[in-house]
Image 1 (cartoon, rainbow, N blue to C red):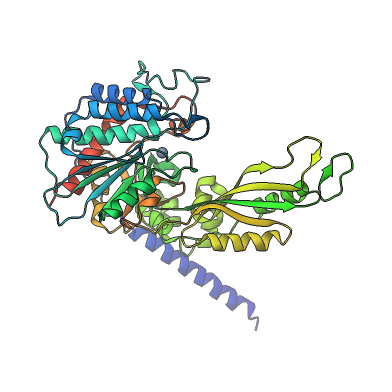
Image 2 (cartoon, helix red, strand yellow):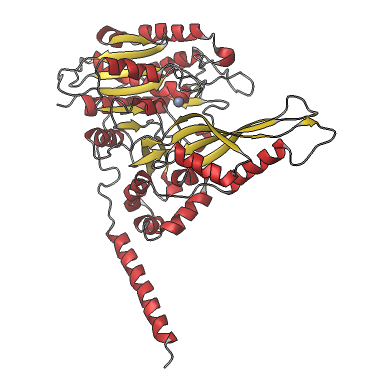
Length: 490
Ligand SMILES: [Zn+2]
């Protein structure tokens, strides 16, 4: 008897059974809450006043004080004065502490000393800009006829900071009292990545004063069109951890000399081969618990095909990981440690073969891996001729507890302010000041209450950065709900 046929039938039967199980799992994966079920809560706010305030804020050019802007101190002092004038109730009720000359802590006392405080972060500094290529002056704060406020920092991240301040000032004007203490911590050097006077010193000061936080919330999460992820709604992503951020220098040392009689291979030749090798051999892909959580949360809300794939992500893991690596740079970054060559150094003259050739590889490390793992990987890949040195590094942060009350209250606040939105936690792939706050709590979340089009997102750190009056008003509504939900309930 031919044994081939029974084996074929059994195999087909098993595949059929597996598919059936996958389909049943998909059908049974129902959303926990209906989109748009939560009532939308709105306070009466003066949209024009908020727009005026964000416009004034961006007119103060608080460019990070590094390199050619290292003397830009006056802008920060002016900004502090402007805050004092614009938010008188905050300055009346909160205790203000200046850290490292330019960073700010505001401490507002709550009624219940038993509760740990809440901590809201923002950074005052912005990246440099010149008027060239801008439709409106880059620090003009121009409010255009189509209701946008133009200026560097309007999105990153004065918009966020002003919305938070507007919300708190609004509540203080209504004599709102809070159960827990509230800290607002505004660093002054988040952007450069080479200066660490702000956030680390704020945290040091808080630790020295015995402060522990219940939770921290910073920029970093986002709201986007869910169709990219197969969700027919807006998706609000709350960053619940952060990748490690390291600069690794790879270098080659080799006899150099005059460029008229080159001896191969040169240091530059070996170095560029090494860079190319790194690009062609990325680190292996892996699902982190938080990335799994993102798709577990989104799956029930997805369109059928996406729902089938995300519901059965464990069974389909190899194919899904492969899909993520090719779909988009962002999805690739969710499932692996990434390497980005950012700087190259060789000779200082055009006709000199350098003795040293170096490249900087900016590396973003996935949760669960460490800088030691990455260095070991690179050394093995590149061999003995290439030196691998870590220049600066923060390892990946721990993952926050998404069953924590504060996380649930942030989700609730989003649902109370934005219609047709699905909220999910996700692993944030860039870096924020929030990474320094882990000595105070593991419950560090990142969320910006702004629905940004891809086009507007591309203006961040770029030309024509702007924010709309409507978005500012909505973000203020969000922070009102967030302050009430997280801090005013006993
Ligand atoms: Zn920022």
